Length: 397
Image 1: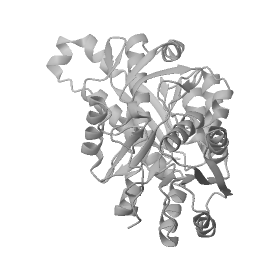
Image 2: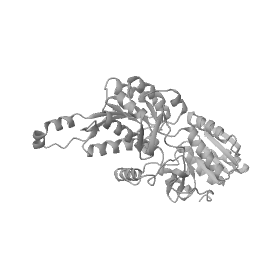
Image 3: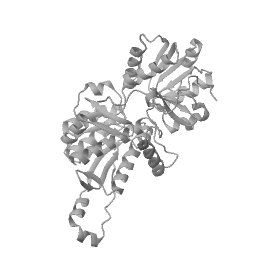
């Protein structure tokens, strides 16, 4: 298993070294930051869109500014990283080595709920703060791990926001598909609770297996029932499959919502003009804040226009690094002190103010976003909106 080490060396010429020996000594001791992330295997798309680019950009920016501020002393960041190959065992073994024998200063989380579910208890045991930007599960919160923090909004606030938006827009009926795993089951359960008493009836609900290749029979059945809203609690490949096949069978309800992956540039690239009006899980874009715009522009400058950050988890990944940077600046590399700083305060980020109760981010509200003219606009709640909701999806094109 190959391990990648990256460090931007401090630019210290010989005369400077003589003039400022203490400064050079400080710069010569990098902050070692370890992580495992998918570069191969089925987790790669999500990991390489939403997560690892942010780690690389963060280290580059900090080092360009002279290093990470560790309680007043600038020290370069050295990233110690490897490919977890989309494999839980590889992921766990890597973090065990990073924290146990390598004793890195800090760790950054892997991609996805399943990997975090496996690694979070380990990080807690070793006492490493873990700010996870791509994990979505009530079970992770219920584990009550004091060193573990979830950046993404969880199923209840996300489904509450969706139902609130549908109800406010006059929707009376909905049809739902959901992937038969932790993500799909938890979001479906939260959706059913949100729908109870909303006046919106569930005309059909169907689960489907991971790796599904054809959703057209269930989409045809749903088309016959003519619901106001379609809700897909789907992963990126299924989000695209459901969208393509809905277009093929002519299923075009007023509201078409598919969840993970809708926020990716890939969705817009694949669906092209057909993306217009499609709703999904998203929480920010370049209009959200000045910081969000600066982050978006820096990301595109480093990785190119073909690799934009996604409009949901990428923002959470960057916000997690903002919080970690502020913590280290304030309390240094004492991991217990970092954990207490994260748990105890309210944090300014590109997504707005973030606060944790236990492991859960309760500062970022549930949100709904919608593709409009090439941008994934936040449309609900109105206080967070970057554009008003278009309450009637146009015909597929």
